[in-house]
Length: 468
Image 1 (spheres, rainbow, N blue to C red):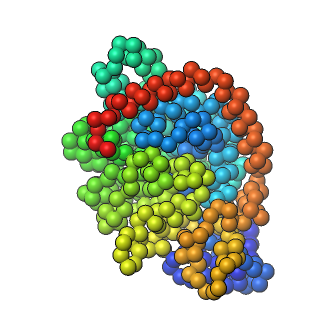
Image 2 (cartoon, one colour; image 1 turned 90 degrees about the vertical axis):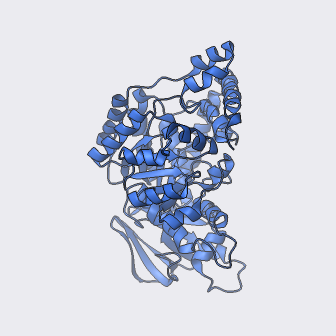
Image 3 (cartoon, rainbow, N blue to C red; image 1 turned 120 degrees about the horizontal axis):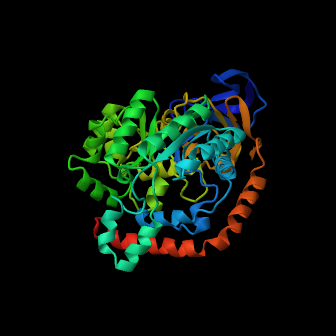
């Protein structure tokens, strides 16, 4: 199956070379190719589709259920307020937004903490990705300590009153044994892994995992060849706590247990040190950078100068919290470009490198072949007020492009977006149904909102003495 698109400009390697003019581009299961000349694609530009290299699949976004931006640690308790909705519909709306922005694939870090329902929920998520038509990396969550505080409740309880302690203990989740969690991931891979879906181990982060869990994941990945996708060193508080737990450094510890390898991608890495970047680069790890989320949750700005100096490969992800809460990968690329452009006469990060991060490195994170899918852009709209039509196409995309300029998306030879609309599912009908489900549960959230506010206050107080 393949689709041929006529365009005025074809940019197969953005930033590396200028666009070809007046060509027909064929997008099929085997990739992209200019297959002939054409003059019927006036105003359109095509390029390989970017990949959203780290996300959580928020159909109902955190703002909508009261998870307003805050520092990461006091923000996390508000995730308890996620409304009970159909997991298929939740993923369908999330993936629909991502596809409409022009992404051919996404890394989905699933949010469930219930191993008993994880296999069924994963099936619903995979079905949603298939129905929307995008490629999927599915990171299956693994953890065995409280998500409220690093190190679990023993670190939090001593600073609480008796009444607070009782309330926190009542709200604390429980976790299945490590073997049972890993078995669930293996079951999901057997049932749902395919050429379009890559199932991965997803230890949420070392601050929420015991040494035993991290060691078990490293062993399982080495044995099965399955990739790992994990948060790492996102906030300043994590840096402080992990330094206490691992005197040799958490990255060095992960290397000692065989966790670092080309099968690993880590998200955020805002607090990485130069020597850690060097070690991760030596081991072939990929970093998924999330500039909007890092700013919105007050984690800081990733040390991209050190990352690039070390030769650490990086991709770009939205983390479900794009700068305008709109899941726009182009704005995320632009923010990365501006944050890390430096102050010199020339940009510190070349345009070509940013596109390579979004397209090539992103594909590696989801374990897919690079540059297989095609996004078609309303380039005439980008040039609408321009006096010249010979501007550098990649520079113009990086400076002006938004999801609203996407006219088409072809993934695996299938039309996913056509004429600026999802061609595979009725996005607005799905969104309305999902919002309706969420609002039906709103009346039941009163007590849970009180609990979330309480936990957030307790966590804020606990971390007040940490470096910020």
